[in-house]
Image (cartoon, rainbow, N blue to C red; front, side):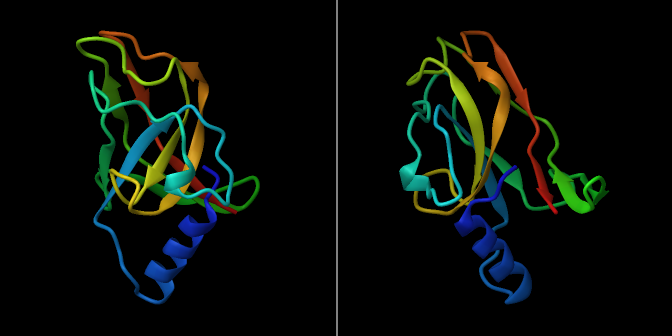
Length: 141
């Protein structure tokens, strides 16, 4: 997961300066191509909050983030969330034809910070009755 500039600033502030630390983060979807300078208000193509789509809470703990460790190559550290699922119900997940990225944010709305984003394996429509399973991987090298 590439980290957004404000995501790096948030992580360093929380870890080094003991700044504000969230107890819950949110996985969200979009049909956008995010870059490091983006903020939550720059993101377009997030599905409407209906038919099974809502930001998924990911608690800041070892249950929701069970895997943390060194990786190589290249040398680095990664953390991986447990599997999260969106299931469309009552219609397709609305607002966009497909989604192609998921992103991690400090809030379920656009008032927080964008931590980073991850491309989906392929652009995806989430049709009525369909489920989309994801894990979030953050690697720092």
